[in-house]
Amino acid sequence: AGASGLAAIKQCVEEGLDVVCFDQEPHVGGLWRYVPHREGEEPHSSVYQSTIINTSKEMMSYSDFPVPKEWPTFLPHRFVAKYLNLYCDNFDLRKHIKFNRKVVTVTPQMGPEGHNGRWEVVTQKVRRKTTGSKCETFDYVVVATGHHWKPRLPDFPGMPEFRGNMMHSHSYKVPYPFKDQRFLIVGVGNSGADIATELSHHAKQVILSARTGTWILPRFTLFGIPLDHLSSRAANAVPKSISTFAFESIMRLQTGNLQSFGLKPEHHIFEAHPTVNGEVLNRIGAGKVLVRPNVDRFSGPREVTFTDGSRETIDAVVYCTGYRIEHPFLDSASILGQEIPTSNQIRLHKHVFPLHHRNIAFVGLVQPIGAIMPVAEMQARWVARVFSGAAAPLP
Image 1 (cartoon, one colour):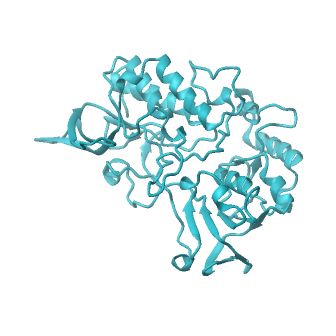
Image 2 (cartoon, one colour):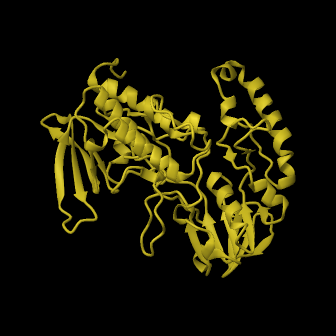
Image 3 (tube, one colour):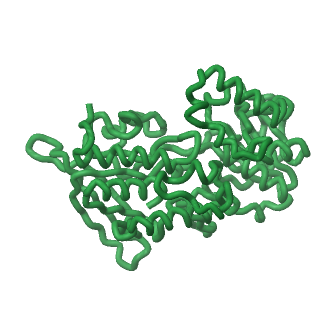
């Protein structure tokens, strides 16, 4: 019952479908519901205490439910979670959600001639004294779990010998436990830049390891306009080479030469997911964040060696290295075409429908440049209309 799941519930209800949503968490909000770290528990939510969404409220809203005008332009996580709850209640979606029920398996129901088109879904109660399971049969299934929940960790030589603290950004919540430590951040995406910036105010030194350079974009332009407001139908109508040159020129004027910060990108601005952060360059310029190339190996109990031969003494590491696409309740090889379990390569028609199964769909299993809400809404609208028969059948 996060951003993608709520959109799927609403669109299916509007198409007259009988909808049941299972969510293992006790509240609406999905990954946007901040949960403080608890010893011995792996957090479901990937947001940390200071997370602020990188898309303006106008560009992240669902089409028929704008964010309140009095709210900030870029919403902290608690506002995003509140917005999702308001959306849920405004369209009376909560009655369709069964909280504290974890999906264990989703398997094709087999008949005399193979899969008969229906699905057997086994769920299990969580956070209850009794944890009994239940099997139900459904005509259609929408998977809206996204992919920001299974951390992807690198495998550098010497990692087992490192004696400091190691974690993925998924488990990072607050900077205070790391005061006066030398901290290594691996990865310069949005999480890497955010955590490096925050830790630079508490740690003794932050080292930011970047495998490649990247475009660093501010949230606001020089004229105080949210940067994502520059994206429009008119802008998209301009030839890509011209719009790319224009955007890159604007960014160079605003941020300067990224090579001087050790982050010179080798690609054009729209060829990879950019990093949105208005402060990290200031912290690099102040020497509070040191930029280094990719990690070569961990060369001692408290030492790391980089690919250029330089070495740093460190006390802790945060891996901001993204997530794996994983659905433990599904046969990912046959349904998603995910032949290598550790690979994020999947085969879906228009990023939504499996090639060999017509009655299951995936909403929100994409990495858009911008917020997931509008994308999930459009995907869910198409899925609901296909399942109800209101749209043309799949090819």
